[in-house]
Image 1 (cartoon, one colour):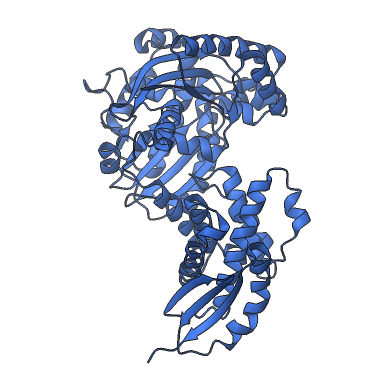
Image 2 (cartoon, rainbow, N blue to C red):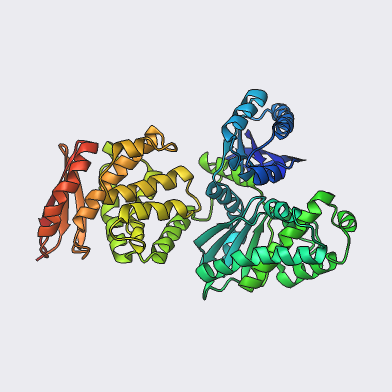
Length: 511
């Protein structure tokens, strides 16, 4: 039995959940501590967090450290989200926290943060898998932004982040001297302008029947048995809208008593509701599910998964692949060539395990690079590498860290361009380990690309054998591969430099 603590430094709340985790009994929450602390409003308005806020945060974190000690917590994770991520003095704040509390905190990228929230819901198992059988959207409402992720036939097909977080919207509207009627109209107008673009780009003919809501306010409301005796059940959108219309007739003071919520949460609940209302209208959804899962739950599930204590029923890796396939489709990528490159590159990767020392995660990154290898041609065929890099870095892939996305983007870029050692090494976000991964994966993708230089998918089968520092790549084809052989030598040079292994082509003709 281990005791694990998950600390979420959010934009409006500091939260910690403590779990007992064991292979026999799984994961069990034993405590949940929360403190209201508005870190986001100041950050979103000024780009910095004042000393007073940092001081307040450290006081609370010191209390959390004492609680963890009392529970004899063996391991913990502490993550900061958008309020910390968007400050100009992030590094200073993290150092202050570590020096004054002993807590080492990391900052999640947006895609990492949303993936943990999504993972927490997905660990609901059968309930989640059944709910997403129909077209489903996960709507994750945060303080700084919202994330809408679309599922089609059980697969995550698209995700998009919009700066429509409840604290950010409240901050914008606080500078406008308007009454309640105008407040409603302006809020709806701000939300609708971005949702209309989202609808054109991602919804089109896609039917979204269900919405899963991840937030701090609507979830808190749904967990209080206003809709069903069984907390956490799916509810009809109509029932939720009816309750909120009735709530609109009451003052914030009355709602504080009725909903048993702090008064400062009522305004944020209302903004969350207006956001959700417009999303429901845009998608014409029928059912709503607020499972009450938080980022802390996602952190705990990730810890349990990494330690093989709890195994997920949902295939998260397939979601990442499906997302990359849809990005390729959006930018007119060649599906057939992507599949050919994927097959060749993974065959080479698997035969080189003893040499490259990379794992399954890097294999996934290589697979993504093959799927996205030509997405930049949508912008420019002359600057394919740079344009592909820009598209990948500008497009979130839920389930990948920012570093992993940068690795994929660089592998695709240097598949088309000369490997510029200095340029890639000086990139501030890349450490030496990541740099080497890029070099190794680029070398493999270049060889795979050289084997299909004509873009005609000439090979029925590809087999590889590594022996005595020579990688023999046997291709089964009766077609003329003069072009492939001629272009292969140049692409093989970098492979030989990286691995000290010489790749050679051997043609096998079918009878």
